[in-house]
Amino acid sequence: MGFLLLILFVLGLILLIVSFFKEDSIKQLEDQIEGTSVTVMQELYKIKKKIRVLEEELMIEDRDV
Image (tube, rainbow, N blue to C red; front, side, top):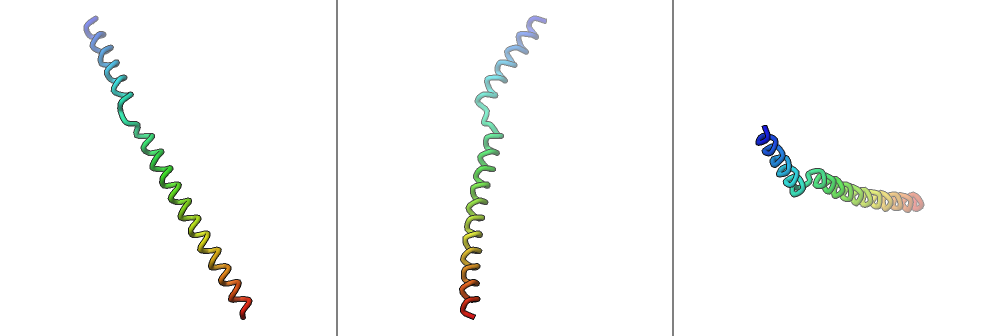
């Protein structure tokens, strides 16, 4: 019985130590989401800028007509 408890205790310690060195998959996911978010914001900015330019061109054409 004591031997079994010792094995379980050692196994628990080994798993605890390994868990500290294991790469955090949640951190990777957060980094991917952050990167995607930045990319989406950049694309949205570009699209809004293009829309603004097109609207200005349409206003200029309306004045000429």
